[in-house]
Length: 165
Image (cartoon, rainbow, N blue to C red; front, top):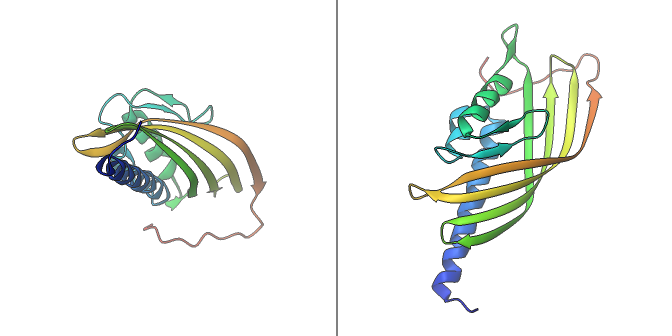
């Protein structure tokens, strides 16, 4: 089946918009911005499965609240969790002009100051996207953790960060 240049160009533009959406989502995670995080998902009925450690949700409001609790938690007024998300190897398949699916590889590095640990994980995303109110949004986001390395932080470690305390 052949498609027109306009159809192919539209698909390329959609794929690029989906990549921008995914990167906005990842930056919201690292920047501890639960409002932008939530805006990346459809308004109602998102299917989210972040695995046994974080859980399953049938709407993005639930995961946004969990994100808020984890990312913004403090101990003695200081932030506890620091994340670094690096997504790569996107494979985005258009399933219609306003629907797509995507597979991504994620490398997550997380420091937990309270526990004194660093986690490094290899994770795979299985996403579904759709256009809602003229914008691409995440309809479903399911992850599979391939492996995680947990190691203690060195004695006397210090976290220097740019977040307001």
